[in-house]
Image (cartoon, rainbow, N blue to C red; front, side, top):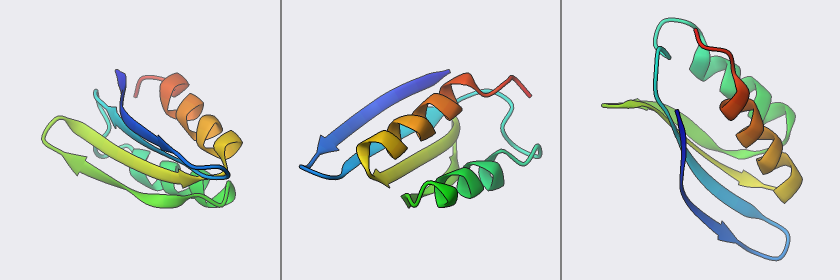
Length: 77
């Protein structure tokens, strides 16, 4: 499940927070998110929380949108 918590827009940068629920521990989900975000030149973090994984990214709007789509369409693990 993907849920947008908030977004803050600036003229050339966008920040998004996303929560991903489901089986995300022990399957390499966080490292995969970090690698993909790094390839898009995004700043932020990904961490486990009590309900799944919390992702926060900031960068160029198109890159942030690509990261969101990846998290939203990732196959169930």
